[in-house]
Image (cartoon, rainbow, N blue to C red; front, side, top):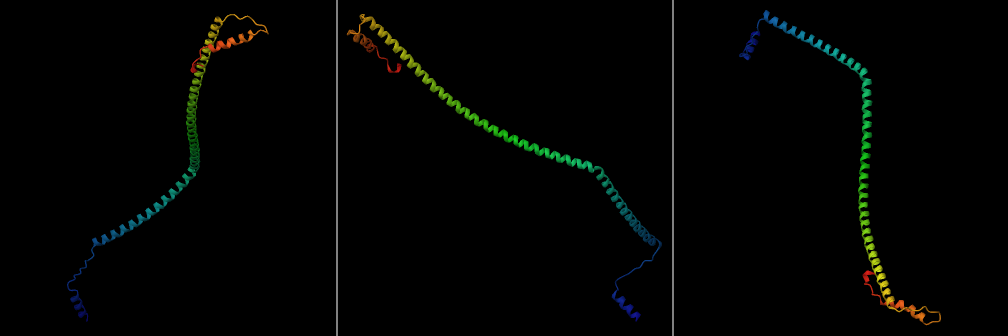
Length: 197
């Protein structure tokens, strides 16, 4: 049966060729070298892991030492930055208030300037009215003075033309005539034009 089985196997695997090499010393040395390299790689990996753990421990120690030594410095730096921030906010608030004050002052100055211009215009109008009134008063005064002069001249001329009147006693009728003569002299005076009064 073994032969039958072997024959059926041969017929089933007729085209497959399997070769088994004999183990020689070179192959054995190559296998040993691969095993030694794998072991060396494992040892190096373990050494690298240990080195990384030691390095991590050193970094943690350095960081804690730095934290202990630089902790007060960082706290002071933090307080300084807080102070700088507070001063900056205070300055910003002061600058904003100053800016608001300047804007309010500018608005008030513009308003005062506008009011001053209005007052100056009103004063100029008042001065024009005063000047016009003063000119009118001056012209009226000049006309009145001229009229008084002309009236005085006319009275002087009428007195020069009139005969001398004796002083009358209380019982004389001539008293009425003396009083009426100056009124007649005023009626004879030339009339002044209406603009010269």
